[in-house]
Image (cartoon, rainbow, N blue to C red; front, side, top):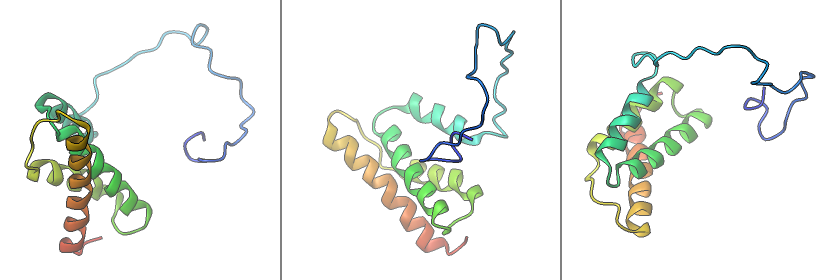
Length: 119
């Protein structure tokens, strides 16, 4: 309810989660088939340089395109992956370079959406 009602907040009438009294929690490794964006994020972090900024910009643009109804939700990861894989890369040594990489990721996704003509 918290995320779905953004920016407003729904009052759901439940107490706040008390982790001390919630009981044991069990965590499992995420399934890479069900969560492909997570694997891509780990690859990008390991590669380093400007790729995390490219991923961020591409993801922001793909999500925005989804919210505008321009693409289906299931295309987000593919568009982001394509942007990352086609990125020229480079070192993220200064803020300007990182911001340029973010911009490049956004522009790449816009190009892919225009050229694909697939919702």
